[in-house]
Length: 368
Ligand SMILES: C=C(CC[C@@H](C)[C@H]1CC[C@H]2C3=CC[C@H]4[C@H](C)[C@@H](O)CC[C@]4(C)[C@H]3CC[C@]12C)C(C)C
Ligand SMILES: C[S@@+](CC[C@H](N)C(=O)[O-])C[C@H]1O[C@@H](n2cnc3c(N)ncnc32)[C@H](O)[C@@H]1O
Image 1 (cartoon, rainbow, N blue to C red):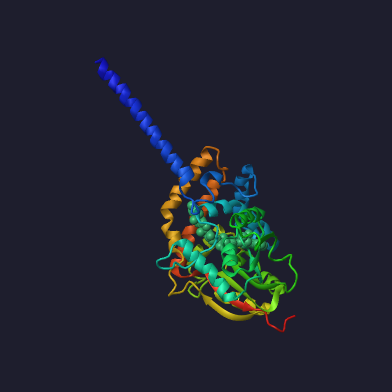
Image 2: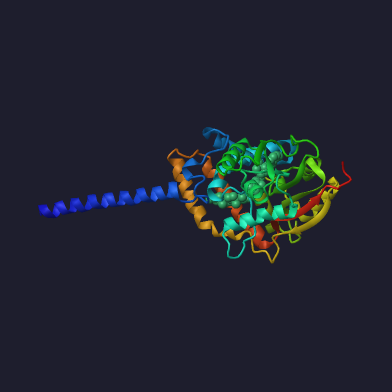
């Protein structure tokens, strides 16, 4: 009897430590190892609220969400840069953790990884701009500088990036230094609607999925026009609705509103509008086409394939938040991203939305 009882105790202790060990390993995997698209970059335990204090994350998220309540504050033009800055405080860490240092989409390239496809989409900008080593290039809305580093090392040009978010400036500078590119990559905190640069001072300019945040596209295009040297080029990848979008189709409208809500957009423009605005500003339009159209492979497959990982990420974030490691509001922010991933995927599948409408624009030579 006694020895049987001893055996039971021994077995239950064994099971206890076994379960504890398994839980510890699972927690280590979830919290430390898993989920980082860039393994050496952000880790789940480092997720924060950008320049916002931990305590303010929840209220900042609520403030962000309230912009879309009626009457929509997002419609007041002057509020937009501030609202976009708040958005990037909330999402920058999650983007880096779950996507990488390039905050944009790219067409899937058969046989290539996401990282390689991203790089190909970025290097295409250099090929289109035709910039030479040592020339000065402007990155309009640079994020944490993934594209800037790829473009600078591919072209050996000097790239200056501008972003409204000072947390991104710090992240981008730190990444530039780590990559040994800080001599040719510079980052400035500022508003691309009023840029702190001299007239006609850049040999080339580009924007990747950034100008969609401008309340008036003509304001940012006019600024790029001003700072670009005459005869030189501006390449932009625009978020637009495509010719398949129907304003009288409820499904389409809901999908586009979902994209606007989860991505801090004051209102998506149509593919037609972007080219027209460029012309109004004075640019010569050299190319105007949707890079998402076949034969390009779908850009949204990466988003769709990630679904399982997003559930795991949600679990990790909820756990970290419960343990007081991640700020409370991060769960809400992640949920918002979760929903927007769905809207973006549906927009891609229905063919009503593109995040890569290409414009190659030239400032006329006679403009001095
Ligand atoms: C150009 C913009 C951003 C484009 C993309 C970089 C981001 C758009 C949606 C983001 C994401 C959605 C789902 C997230 C997921 C739930 C999370 O677990 C991990 C991060 C995501 C994959 C996240 C990553 C970045 C996006 C793909 C806009 C804002 C103009
Ligand atoms: C989706 S991110 C893209 C970043 C980068 N182009 C990339 O592909 O990684 C959009 C960027 O535009 C910047 N942005 C939005 N509105 C801005 C404004 N008014 N002035 C300066 N930057 C702005 C954001 O801060 C962010 O860095």
